[in-house]
Length: 485
Image (cartoon, rainbow, N blue to C red; front, top):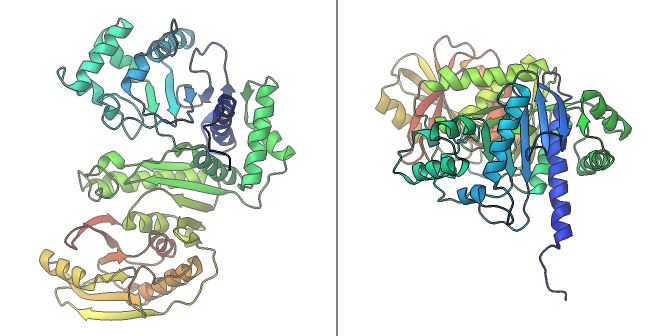
């Protein structure tokens, strides 16, 4: 048996080329979006210094210059990488970025946007990279407010001295530089390219993807350095990649950032608005008023962006909790003409899937506090007692509680297939309309289910009373209010 070996240097170069070509394809497909702001892309552009790998011209934002760094042998990215010459006598990456920034500012008359795109993960304890924002990948403003005696403040001073500029000038420069580290593996990038192909109206299977990447590679090797929408349509037409119907992608980055937001037709990013340091602990917002004052309007705006593309099939992706999934489904409702899909642990759930019969048990509990109605959708676990305890503790004005659960009992195995899930969503929707459709007061909704079920229930939302959604607070089995519909 042959002993495993590290990839040869030529293999690493080829993998790096594939990574760069797939990344380029991701943006090239955005040229075809009806509401996209990308007008042209350039590859290995002249006069762009070390940020010439992919230049993205945008109609309503400054041009974005990308340097793409792919590594096969992973070592953490540290702030010292930026100030260390790759080889003796060469300029440091930080100096190259700054020189490109100055050159492009003079050439264009405005400050360019630049980004380092790399699959190398940031070192967990790096003081400078800890200042990178999850929202836009930039060090500013966090690096700017770091105390001068802190580890980050000391690196800030070292970087300014390395460039021979003031710390204020350094921060002005860094306000236009994104560090997008940990951009995941090549296969994950290819998966996102498949979504982008579907969004542009083409087949998104692996064979089609490899054909598109190969065509793009051939063009670049032949000397092509720029692409516009017409050129990209010509490529896809020659490859006969047309699908029957395009599908948009809505990316919701609620409790964790996504490595490839570029693949989405529309997206929102709320990670920094949540309390907690990871997806498991991010439940409540720093400011609970933002559920309806910021998050909901931003989600509505993202869906309006999808509406402008004229696409009616929407694939929802991203890390979010149940009330967010239900609201996304409600805003992408069936009555508004949308079909939705989402990937679950057992495959893709879709509103268009055949619906397998689901036996739903319905229970009514008299609470007697006032005229509002509460509903507990108890599919993956039993929540009736927790909901009743919360209602009583918070003295909510609720007269009765409707509990919906599988006849076989709530459990993680209560739904066996995506088709079974589509049937469960239809059964729950029918029960909701029958039990609450004529109600004139407020509906309070609690849910314990797979995320795909919440999305499909929302998609079937129709002629329902104003609803207050609730989120599980985690430990202790309590809740807190989130969105209102």
